[in-house]
Length: 299
Length: 275
Image 1: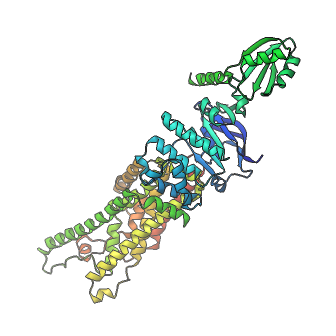
Image 2: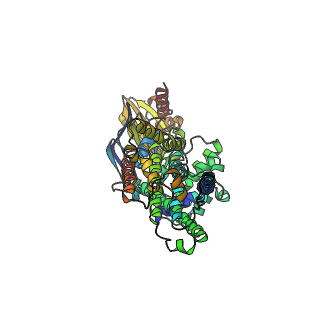
């Protein structure tokens, strides 16, 4: 797999607060990579550093396997925090500036404006736009001339439900075209809906990272136990929807690649002559964990 | 050229830019008309007591027009307008956070600084050229054949004015990059130019009588003194004005050195600070 971004031990401190602490991660081609964490967990600081806005205290990062440069940034489309444009210029003129900075001609501007649903308002000044339109213009600007990677920092923050739906539809559309995406968000639900990989961040540290289905397993994660766990494990591994299994303190934690109900499993194991001593649907354990993190952070 | 094209895309549709530049030329024109009126009123007043009357002041004949118009275009209250334009254009980037977007989109920080310096240079050049054309036309209208023969003898004032404008705009560039806030930068810059430096002058001069030493080296004063006096013969007699035949190279060096240091500080801090 081609590596798009690799971060090695990146750190940044603001006074007494360690915003990012020896953070390392790797994003490969065609991943939709979520960075999930509560506000103040270091998401924006991390993205700011890899986009050359914030100077890291230590550590390094590479884009496309090379040292970062202005040329590598030209292959990145990024929406950072708030949409940043000249209020007195029209959407079109603002995008002409973006195109010029990135050394593109103006031929792709109409396409991205149409994609963002702003074509009819393209000649209106940016300051006349609603917040949702501003955010979509930011996305349009990031998508100009199909970047190799799209970076989105809280792209739905502050939007109404309709605006959120519009942005998410756009992101999924882009992901469908095979563009690599990094999405920072404090919304578990958003990361689950959009991403296939995730790193969970808290207080500048990565708590865990990996495939979204494994890390953020929801109802298709089932706890099992029996007198003979070896036989049980073998039986589960034969299940057609089997994905992965781990054992911990006499309890097996099974993940299935599609929605499998505990009742189905019970029936399935019964046919295989395995008697269960424990069966439970492990509901949103990580969401609970994540919510606790949020609580810790607020208190 | 690419960086300048980007800057022009930002500047040319910007109404505030045209309004303030328009105000600069408006105040300049009003200032010159009023100056001529006041000088002539003074001359009329004095002439009542003189057996041989002084001639009326005409500001617009060659070669004096070069010195007169560049003098009026360079006084504090007028020079501040283009500086405010530069402050607004640069702080806008920080206030709208478009500087971040520029960097993210693939501009290097050095390129960002260079693009703003190009605007500073271009604005100083365009104002000088417009002034040059105005002086040329007015000069031709008001000059007789004898003064026409001396048309280029005061041309160093035009070069001096360009340096004056260029360096003063560099100061504005510096203040904008350091403060990053439009209101604060304009307020401090205006306050410094119009009040703080004259007060320093007053305080230094009163006890020590250091008229031509310390004060000369204060940044804004060094700029103002490049074209220090107008060339109005009647005024010279009335008020014992010193003569200034041409712009001295030395008077240009001090503001140029200040500008170089300021650009250096901007380069150093902007490349290290977070955006």
